[in-house]
Length: 79
Image 1 (cartoon, rainbow, N blue to C red):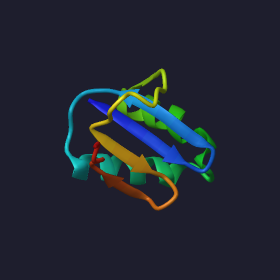
Image 2 (cartoon, rainbow, N blue to C red; image 1 turned 120 degrees about the vertical axis):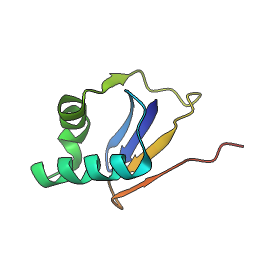
Image 3 (cartoon, rainbow, N blue to C red; image 1 turned 135 degrees about the horizontal axis):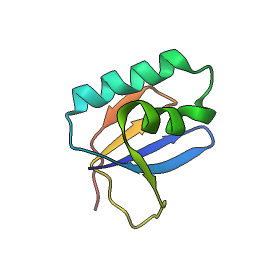
């Protein structure tokens, strides 16, 4: 499963095992509880939940997006 993480000065893709939108929301909240800013979100998210950061590309289609600015997880729509 590929997840795009975006926010203020963050644009990253991570890869890991498949999970639900609800579980991703819970994981995002856990990481946000441990950090004061978004700068370390990706590395802590990967460390805590066994994801791996992958090369960012505009051509990659994510299964879900985690938006750290609005604290939301959603399924993207590609045209």
